Length: 216
Ligand SMILES: [Zn+2]
Image (cartoon, rainbow, N blue to C red; front, side):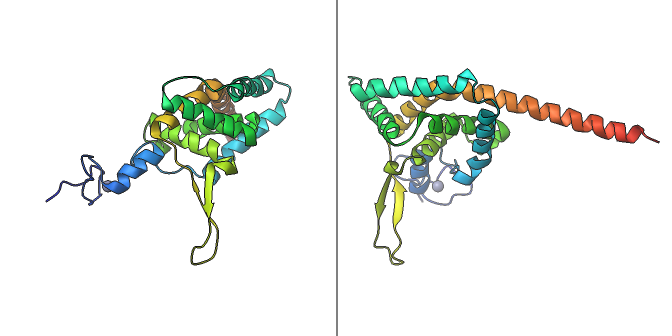
């Protein structure tokens, strides 16, 4: 009998030399970990709104324009000339970033990255490991651009289908490193602020209930 897939509860046989079955192997390739679930638009939406609210609250804070500039500097440099390197994933990753910059704003990318940090801080268990987080980060950012998808019609129901064009895992890793370098520190900072404010709100609530209890 062929050995079973490493994933708990999966009865499929391993594929080739992999410890995983073909289903979990392709899940790992696409999602960064064989048991990483897809982070959907609606998963991220409340956190996108939190970031947007924070920007609206302090629209002149230098941080937001600095984020825009960081994106513009990097992408316009590579638009003029892609890095010359023998590493295919570096060429593919920078090309993908420039392609994104042609269709989406740096601000939207920054907001998405920061929101992913908030989501992670809010529920770390959503991510199986760092690669799971980074792969979902890249997916959410690529979803901003319709050019990240291939489309086809002709399904039996006549509706158009779309699927995200796949990148090599090594390219995804490189692209995630670029995004983390550009916007990660802002994500960490905003997550910190969110936590502090939630903490203050909790204290305020508590003090309120204590005050209620004191009245006779
Ligand atoms: Zn499996």
